[in-house]
Image 1 (tube, helix red, strand yellow):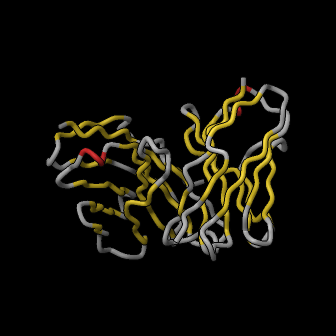
Image 2: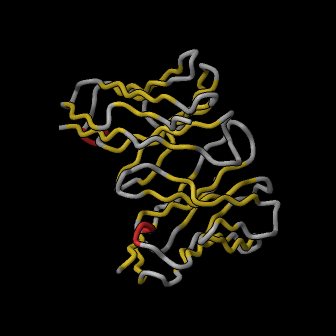
Image 3: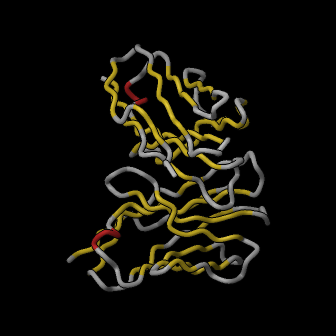
Length: 115
Length: 114
C-alpha cells in the first residue's frame, strides 16, 4: 500500500522569506504522480504543483518549486518570496498511474505567513 | 469555465437521519471522486464514479453510497448518521479519473451530526 508522510504539522515563515515543506512517500510503483495541494480557510483544495515520477526535472510554478528525490522517495515544496495569501494547509498527495486509482494524501502542514 | 460546485455548503443533521450531498463537476469531466476530511483521520477516499458507474470504493461502511447521473453530476448519500460522520466532504472532478494533471476540488460540504 502507498503511504504519504508529512512530518511537519505546522510551520511559520516571515513574509518575503523562503520556506520548505517536507513530504515522503512509500510505493513500489514506477508509474505515479505527486502533487501539492493548498487548502485555505475557504476549504477548497487548490492544486499548487505536480510532478511526474518519470521526469527527473523538478517542477516549478512561479514562486513554487519542488525538490523531487525519487530514490529517497522525497517530494518537498519550496515557497519563495512568501506572501500572506500563502497562509493555508498544504497537502502532499500521491496517485498511481491508471484511470481507476485514487489520490492518497498526507496529513498536511499548516503554514502561517507572518507579516 | 465554472468550477466544481458542491451543495449545500453546510448541513446540520441529527443522529439516525440520512443526508444527500450533491456535486456538479466541471463541464466535460466524467469522473467524480468523493473524499471525507476529518481532523483525526485526515483525507480519506470514499468512492469514484465514471460514466454513471462506481469504479473504485474506499474502506467505508455501506451506509455511505453514491451515484452519478448522465450529466456527470454526482450525489453522495449517508444513511443512519452517526456523530463520527461529522466531517468536510469534498468532491473532486477530473476528465477520466487517475488524472495525472490533478483533480479539481469543490469547496466541500460541512456536515455536522448532532
